Length: 319
Image 1: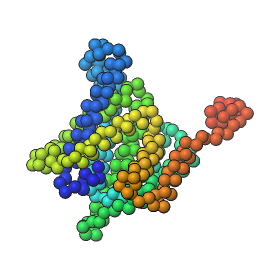
Image 2: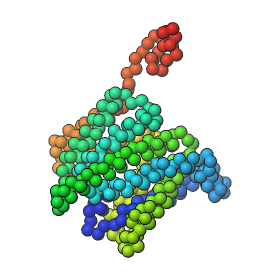
Image 3: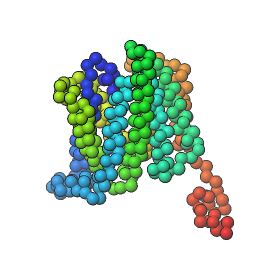
Image 4: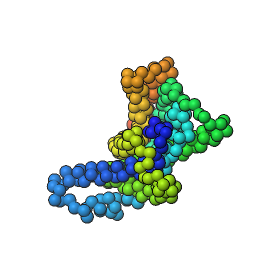
């Protein structure tokens, strides 16, 4: 994605976001229909009325999906914007605040308890992945004046923070929707994509970038790297839905961090990426933080069982 935004001929970011959402919508719709037909046993038992009711009926709570849809739309557009304002290392390192934000919203929205050793593991994860990213050392030189460079960096960091904030809230909110209702993850993805495409096209493609699109064309500046970027965005959307449905956002953060390490190792064998001491230390910290987060909680026991799970017995003892 970063490489696609530093090529000489630039594409319009809002068009790429809309294309990715259209792809997610189409694939999610097909998958939803396939799984529903398999459940019913025959395609003859499934019709358009049932499909519309499942996606937009009263039990689907479709309108609630507007919240994460709009936030994901903001996130995707700001992500492209921040990549043009920051060098790769600064962008990757500043993005790691998202792990702490996700944990915060998990406690606030889902009312899920995060134990002290798990908080420690989350901050260790952030520190470890910063070391891994910092070791790549691929900062780019800027031709801008010091004042312009400072403005660019400030705008880039602000957009990264808003991206992490919107992504964290939307992810946890969407997790609550997936786990508290019986609507299939593919139906939720259809709703999410549809509610992202409509405002994305109206606000991004017609209002903000409308003049440029009319002058240059919708697919102006597109290259194979643009297509790869759209494909990655689409694939990421599906992976996120599956992980959130069957795990949670915090575990997704750990999995994402480990995937970054595996990506760096792959670069070592394919592109000759230099393995530094900083990278090795960062890897060990990330792996240890993953172990620490999953470590079983030692619960205090009392005469009548677990203290945390036996509040009624504790009240009787106090009486």
